[in-house]
Length: 303
Image 1 (cartoon, rainbow, N blue to C red):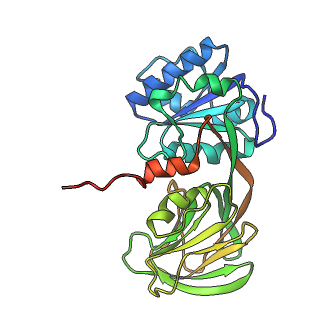
Image 2: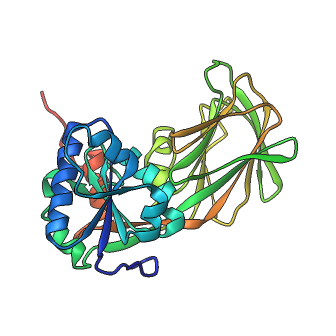
């Protein structure tokens, strides 16, 4: 039974969400479903996961359902894949307050804590309520054209306005809480949550923000004026990016949802009322994860 965000009770119903088109993930998901079933847990398989993975392994023993049903009935969801799979599940389930556990089958895995080899050994701690809960903020985004909202989306990592496929720079105006901040000529601008600070924002020279912070980072992409530097604003800020000139502007949400823009369009961003709850295994440390993923402690390779 779901409890308030920031904590969770021993689950009775668990949903499994997996990356598609991977035999390795299919086998891991089947093994996990069998283990949970033997422990008396009701298991749901997310519908699209089942449609793809079910071609490789037999999942007929378990109920398949969409994210809406998972949100209504599951106590938590275990996501098997990489950060991309986790991002999609987080956006789809945040409004339902379903906590998420990540099993890393991707590459870096900043949001998927559990290694595939440790997946089953961690389940006792999870089922007995010994994982720790951590809330992550999301961004609400809306696209405004000619005074009308034409699209809306959520982002756990970031919203990126960029120049699209054309090589020319984009020109945009940045407003914060209605105040004009600057004109920007660049390849684009990243608006990042603390969770997203280790994603595209990091590659663009942005700061790493601890996930418990509630700031929003603004990182220009290859700005024409080198004085345009990353800025962090508080989570109550209302941010508006207004396109003034561009050949092929676009906005991307978590690198997974893309919308074509036009000159004159505005992308408005604010902190969402929803949060995502990540459940971490005992002994989890954010900084230990960074040391491992970013190779901070690797010795130089000598000749």
